[in-house]
Image (cartoon, rainbow, N blue to C red; front, top):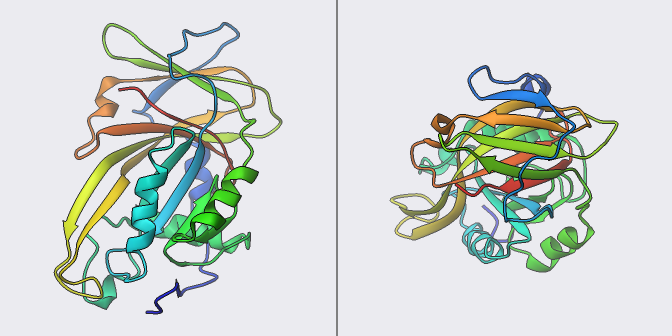
Length: 259
């Protein structure tokens, strides 16, 4: 594996059913309502954070600098950093304990679009579902962040006495966007037993534990009600809402929830 960036599997096909998953709501996830009234907003404000997705692997010797960069970037409230460990380096002698096949499939879908910095490699950071760069190159990542569009719909929240959360999305557009609830572990520490990082102790930030499709935002004010049971994912201590256009398109809005 090269010391600067590992490139492999470039041009992998998009996985089947991704578009349907973006647009078909999970039956247990939420109740959806269109609305024209204002909903109580939480104190976290109305600005959209820029989403940075880090594709990394415990079996990648080039990844630790990117993992550390993700930790630093996550301290910036204007950014939402999401770590997505992939599976394709498991064959190198160590099976990534945090990897999810869904992360690998998502990266391949991004790669198939041929955007800036595209490809299936680690470490890679993808910004707002668009351009990407080698995940350890901070200047390149910050350049992508500066160019990111923050003018998407506004997400606010309110929680009732029973713990049910109402997600209110306000704005207008002529496109659809899938609405997803992402469960995250804010910090993971893993002792690597074998492979390129054998003997090292690695630290990861905002690792994806689960994702749930809530439905579709149709370009007008809508509300999604989420049961407290949806905030009980094992290992997760953070949750975020992501609005992303179908087929792993641009991320148009996001919010880290106050749970």
